[in-house]
Length: 244
Image (cartoon, rainbow, N blue to C red; front, side, top):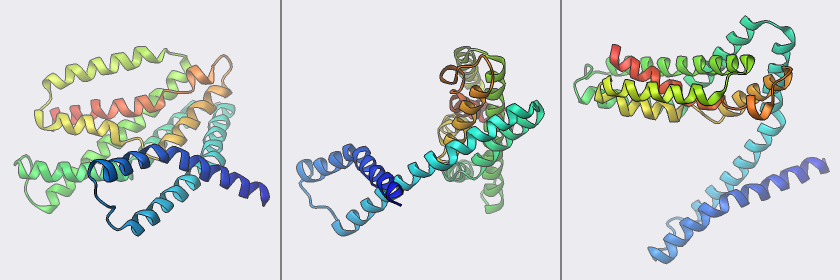
C-alpha cells in the first residue's frame, strides 16, 4: 500500500510539473497582460485539480496496463509465428481504436455540416450522418492499413524514412488533383486519428514486436507506427474526395 501511495504521489508531482508551464502562461496573460481577475476562480481551481488527478491516473494506467499489455500481445503473436493473425490484429487495433475517437467524430460531423452548407451533399440529417459515417470509416480503415504497413516494416526491416518521404510525396501530388473542399479535411484527419488509447497501444505493439524479432532494434525498428497512422488518413481521404 505504501508503494502504491508513493507511486501516486510521484505521479501527482510529475503532473504538476508538466502542467506548470501552461498554468504560468495563462496566469501571466490573465493577470499581467489582460489585468483581469479569473472568472469563477473556484471552478477553475477545481477543474485544475481534476486535470492533475486525471493526468496522474492516466499516466499510471499507461505504465501499469496499456504498455505492458501491448508488448505482451506483440510478443505472443511473434512467438506464435502466425503472420496472418498478427496482421489481422494490427488492422483491427488501428480500425477499432480510431473509429470511436472523439476528435475524429467531431471533425467528421463538422465536415458534414460544412459540406451540406456548400451544397456538396443534401442538406438533411440523413445525408450529413451518412457523409460523417463514411468519412470516419475511411479514416479508420486507413489507420488500420497504416498499422499493418508499420508491422510489415518491422518484420522486413525496411527503413522508415523512405516510406515516410514517399508517402508525403504522394500526398503532395494527390493534393494537386483533389477537390479543394476535401484538402483541409484530409490534412486534419491525419492529426485527429492518434488518440489517447491508440498511441500507447500502437507504440507498445511496435516496441514489443521489435523486441521479439532477432536482429531488430526496438529504438530503430519499434517506433514509427504513429507516423504511418498520421500519414495514411491524408492519402485515403484525398482519394475518397477524388472518387466520391
